[in-house]
Length: 345
Ligand SMILES: *Cc1c(COP(=O)(O)O)cnc(C)c1O
Image 1 (tube, rainbow, N blue to C red):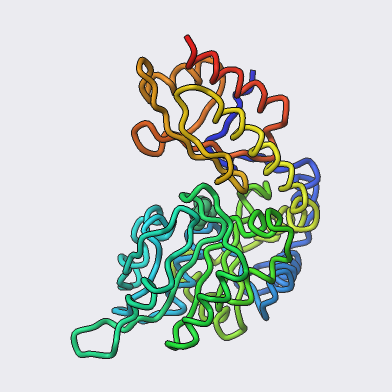
Image 2: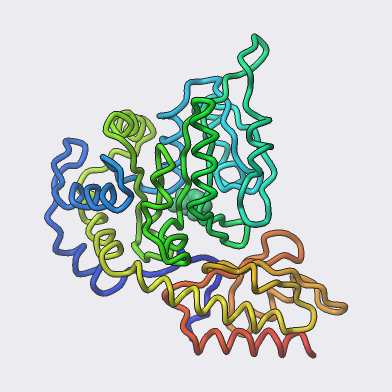
């Protein structure tokens, strides 16, 4: 039996429509900017995010890296959350490859950064200080329960950035989850940002790929940095074809993932030994703590695995479950039942 795999929404396989589109895609050499399918995807991405231009990249990590390289000089400082993906999970690329100095600010549980803290962290020009250049936000916020940031919060950060002449980069790996969860247009979450990265390879189910969206000059710089780090691809239209299917037909269904996630959160929260507030779960990610007198984290994972359920332990006793297209409502019931029976031995 195929396991129920909640480790990540990146595990989603391409749909039959994607496989067909990939096989039949019209392609060219994208380093020569001659791939028609890729251009079509970039145009659609730019249009959806309300930006002038877009660039296809192999991964979200590369998208964030080249965005930050395109905003900053070596020695510049950027402000970002202490739970942000860029700070925690991107191999320190901005420092290693860009000489960019990260200044971290504690994330609130909902993924926001307190405005007074942000403002306090902006450096005055003084011979001792690296210049503050950029604020990075994350929406939805992966390691803050997949929380979506709302347009009002984004507007307030925009106003602060404008006051100090700073730029904003949005790590929108799950940007479409954020929009769908709030029933708003994606543009309401991107107009405040100078650059936006979003992933096709997560809940949107494409096999590979992310996009960076911004103005034309920025995308031109980003294109050069993408080449520098080895991300200039050739007949990448085969990949873009899957991305087009994702953007055209799989965005609205993210709602289903959110409904299943809410159901699972409510069911898990009612199990003795699990610490979880379902009201904090807004998209497709659940974090919970295990506080059980007899079962520790490792054995919990093993017992789940024996029952063909896989989840991630992100810290000792802390677990992350991510829902996606390949987890249906019936499987949610199975997961909840299995967890209950394991913990009420
Ligand atoms: C997954 C993720 C990324 C990176 O995407 P990859 O394609 O895995 O490199 C960046 N930011 C956030 C918030 C993510 O969840």
